[in-house]
Length: 320
Length: 320
Image (cartoon, rainbow over all chains, first blue to last red; front, side, top):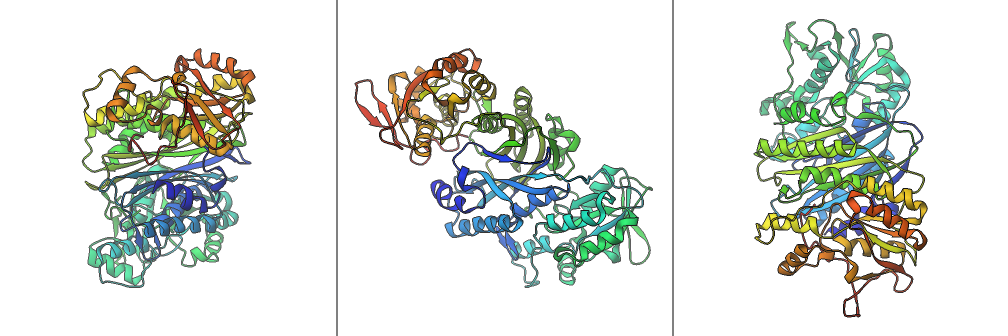
């Protein structure tokens, strides 16, 4: 199997074949400021409506680079495969990796495959690390400022609920799909419109919007006030969350971000988002405030405020 | 557990704490030619004489960078942890990662932790990716030339046999240790002595010397002729291999390399190796030939030649 992967499957990935046998790939990058990130993917089930673990592994790492305003350039790929994983499924996953990388114009230049015995892994685990080129402005989770508008790029919870429905074979909804997508071109459009006014970008993966906002509040030492009625959630996601006893704000996404943007530039950035295919449902959901630093508050439809807490543990484990 | 790791264990690693909460770390590198590599580690048992999975994960990726003549600079760290992994063991592994990184002067700037349920992973899997700065000369597995001398940096098979003895609780030997080590300073000394005459470097991990030489022969389109009596193997490794029915040439190492060096520079490079603590047992084991390209031949003690084949499958699975 190891041979098959190394000789047949991996060479089909963009960028990898010429150097596949070297211990390390050599790469050229024109800038001296790079972004570097890594993520491991353990999602169950491996395939879900709208994508599979391979799609996620490419999008997830690209998105982490994009959140620093970096153009994704190179990926590494580490596969840990359980003996007995059906070959057709492996082929499909590798194909998804290749398609996602090609679509995002990134090269997978180095990789590693380990095969472990039956029962030692859940089918396949994937790790990707990524290198991107930073631009002139590097948004940071520590840079949100009171007055900033909080913008989200679209509906929340689609990925988590799609995976959950697939995993539990729930008969709730049939047309809900993961939102998995590479966000770097959306980010490029936002930075072109807003430049340094885009203080903070965060992709809303594990722990969803609740985790993202809490991390920003804590890291920037600010408060966040969000308007519940402004947060876009699809009706079927809302219904599924009610049935499952989950909050759509705490469910993972893989193609959505929140941005903290200076108020003077917020309109322009929002328009840039709405003009991009991955941001058509973008909207303002709240703002950064100086009161209650480190805390996220939610203005409810009935006019009261409640604390939106950092999700304790993982509400939906193995979602990415 | 995820919280504990993110908040208590990982911040103790060199380089990671200031940016731990960002989606991607930003790094500065002065050169525009980089080396990039990744490796996943699934070794069983997790701890063995001379090291543990954490030590290996740092050394393995540093060594892959070093084989391209690159100075290792930055590592990423992806942990996939099985629920129930004893906390003390996890602490020990993280401590080993930190110690190995500090000793090699590399920073772990970005990381990710996933916890999977009991039975979904074997305690812990670790992925590291690494970025290094290339020097003026980049050795390649494709660059070996007929006439080159084949140099190994020391005794072979120590790591694989140490892991195997620990795994099987064999009562063969008590003082054998893994040779796990970061080879970049040894490589720097070799390149200082030999420069461009050092055509090829290969660390002898999975598949050991046999795999390394076969990969060089195939990638460079040359033959390799090695002298069995010249290949350094510790007596206890030789005995253990006899008992286990293994070839010491096919057993993994994690702190040994083979170099293909122009004959005129071979003595000087060999002396540089022998003057380095990780190369005291370095020696010439054979040479590159133009006959039988793609094939590795072994001159036996009785004067005959036999083909040293690429180890089929993994003789010692889960060794790295």
